Image 1 (tube, helix red, strand yellow):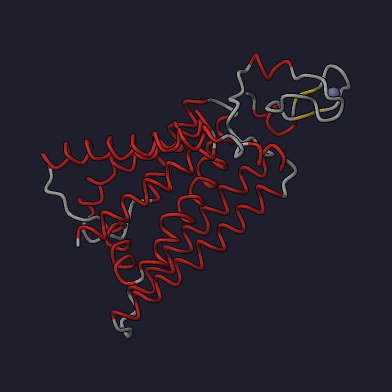
Image 2 (image 1 turned 180 degrees about the vertical axis):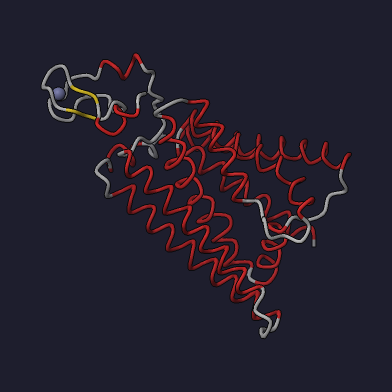
Length: 274
Ligand SMILES: [Zn+2]
């Protein structure tokens, strides 16, 4: 799709009004949008207004950045006792994710396409596919992990270390955040926001950018062991790829289910490993 078409919309041949090319029918006169079939608009992808899509990505991205900045402040405040740091970072994580969730949901519900958005969550089969994609992520990332362990003795990356610290000390709070609210927020930000916006232009372009950014946000640039962080990148690339695939194929209900289950399994493994 052309940039001009994305922001200005396409002209309806029937009533002459401009409307979003991703809409099946003209919202003014209800005539079928001919380009809908020609451009093969993916049926399960959520197409909010382009500005709502960009807004969703920016909100999620800003919250993520804010969280990391605050977390670093907490972790490197010298005066605190260790137990205080864990409590503060867990509380912080919960507050950030809950408020991020409210903001993202508000964009989805109040940007003018509520019915279409909610309609993507009503089909039970999407959730079943989500289970399948979750199993796929687990199996593929284990295979990637096994291949990597041939070349590099695996150590925990910074992200995993933070998760473990919170999970062991505040299991319920961490579980609600890391297994449910967190992954749903990430799906809003990177799939419903970023991917769906870029998807208007080109599928492959959208895939590549989304997977790269998704991997980058799980990468800790301030970690002491950068080499170790680099070795954990492939598993995030794989997870990002499969989740994006799940979204393109069956929409947000599917990718959210997959992400929630995947994180829950990872969380359970942290607890079991102790
Ligand atoms: Zn029309």
